Image (cartoon, rainbow, N blue to C red; front, side, top):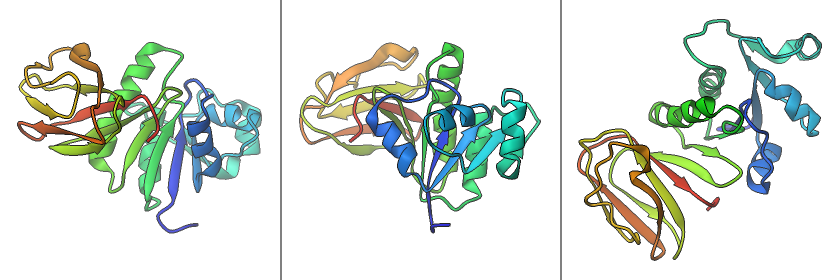
Length: 212
C-alpha cells in the first residue's frame, strides 16, 4: 500500500453526483465503505477496498462476496462512519476525505457533519468532508484561509463564549454570538485570503461552496 495514502470513506447517505467528490472516490488510494454503501459503490462501477460497520444493512450476498475485506464491529456506541474513520487511522493516512455523509435523513446529516470536528481533532492528517455542493473543514484556532473574491463560506461554532474576529469577509463576524447554527452562514470572501481570529481555541466548522 502507498505510504501515507489518501483514504476516502464512503458513508451511506446520498451517493455523490458532483464531479469533485466522484473524482476523489475514483482516485483514492483506499476506499472504505460504511456497510451498505459498498453496494452503492459497486453499482457505480467502483470496488471497495474495505467495508466497515455493524453489517445491519449489507445484504447477505455482499457479505459473502466481500467477506475477506469486511471489518464487522457490532458495538453501537459509534456509528458506522466513526468506525470507518478509526479504521482509516490505523493505516497511517496522509489525508482522509469523507463523501456520501449527507442527504437522506436530516438527523444523520447533522450528526455526520458535527462529527467532523471530532475527527479533525483526533487525526494526524487533514480531514475533510465533500458534498455535492462544496466541502466542510475544521479549524481550532486562529487561521488564514485561501479564498478568492466572492468565495462563499459559512461558519459554524458550538461555543457561545467564542468570539471570532474576521478580516477579509463581506460580513464581519466580530459581534456574532455563536448560540445558533445560522448566525455566521452565507458569508463571502473579499480577496485571496481571509482571516478568522478566535478568542480562544475552539472547534469551528467551515463550509465552502466549492472545492478549492
